[in-house]
Image 1 (cartoon, rainbow, N blue to C red):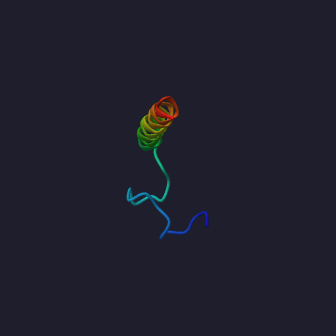
Image 2: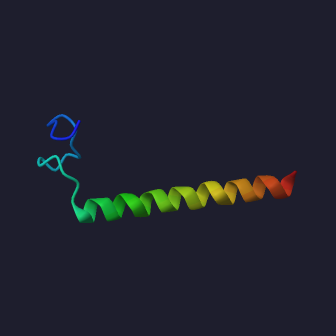
Length: 46
């Protein structure tokens, strides 16, 4: 729920900063890339 103090990212403010958001996006992009590489490898092996 918006404004819920128990639903924060640890920054104490409850709002994700731009820097935190960018870092999370980069982490997720790397994860997606890894998954896509694994899928491509699996497709080649079949």
